[in-house]
Amino acid sequence: MYLCTVENPKKIILFDGVCNLCNRSIQFVIKRDKADLFRYAALQSEVGQKLLSERNIDTKTIDSIILIDPGVAYYVKSDAALQIGKHLKGYRSLSSILNLIPSKLRNIVYDFVARNRYKWYGRKDQCMVPTPELQAKFLG
Image (cartoon, rainbow, N blue to C red):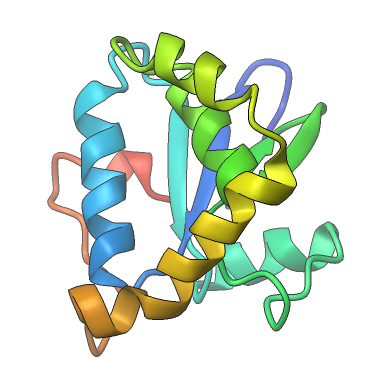
């Protein structure tokens, strides 16, 4: 089991493991995470469920990307996406600019895409299986 500690302060991205858009987004982040700041877990995984439960996050109301910043906070929906973007080279400025838009407005767009993600991008029958090179970045 992965533990978030002062010695191991990785940020954790929880994502919908059967969503094609979500999987592509995780691949996008992995390629640009040059500082190796993030670890990943599917919402559907045992680790994902435990992390959600520890934070009392109800996936019936939030089935989106979730960023857990150990010892600090957790972020959902567009706030999570922008927090992730702040740590990716070339996306810091864009994240800062978009962060000026109130989250309530940003989440209208986020929720629209989230509601249609399976229809537009499809879904897998099972969660993504990381390649051996990426296995260490995934929890569980």
